[in-house]
Image 1 (tube, rainbow, N blue to C red):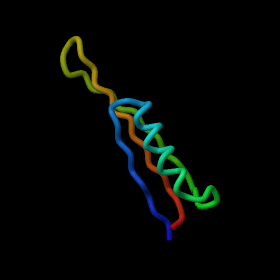
Image 2 (cartoon, helix red, strand yellow):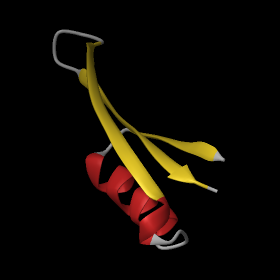
Image 3 (spheres, rainbow, N blue to C red):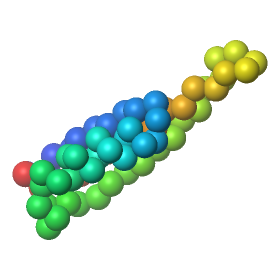
Image 4 (cartoon, one colour):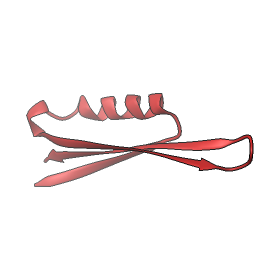
Length: 60
């Protein structure tokens, strides 16, 4: 069975840490793919909010 695990963080280092913790729990041969995305939104003139997200596709 194919499954997905979704991740969403405001900081790229937090996303990296969370994904690495998950990847440690699955066997490398079960990893199918990783999708990565960055979104940026302007809140005010001085503030920009980033959203770092990823999806790990793996075999259960």
